[in-house]
Length: 140
Image 1: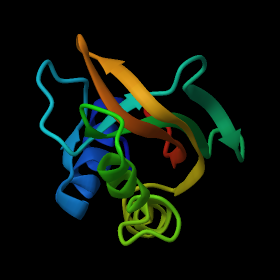
Image 2: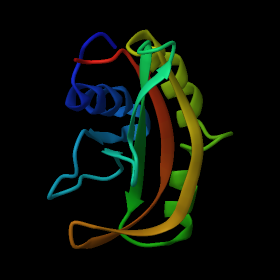
Image 3: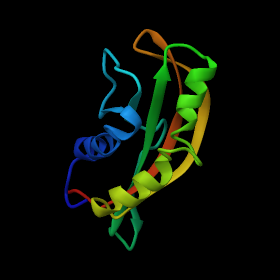
Image 4: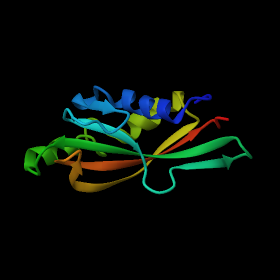
């Protein structure tokens, strides 16, 4: 990613996810969510690390993609969410790692966590979180 902003990075990830398995991609947390959804946010804690390779070669950005599929925990919601996980028809790991590499220095889907109900914007949704590390060209 050459000299793009953090906002542009989140938008690139959201755009890549839009349409996959019917996902609505969001580059920031919306007030109203259309399901199924992929909300791209900075990960909790340190989410931007400077100078991670070759003395100012790249910076690492930690992103969380919050996948939301239903407003309740049920078998159908679990089956729908499973389609975005390893072995599913829309496995996010190869999708993001293969397609985003054209726009950034590197991207890895490091883990998936919190397969449960999530409270977002005053409502409860069933989903999980995909944790990404994205290497970007430093922006001055």
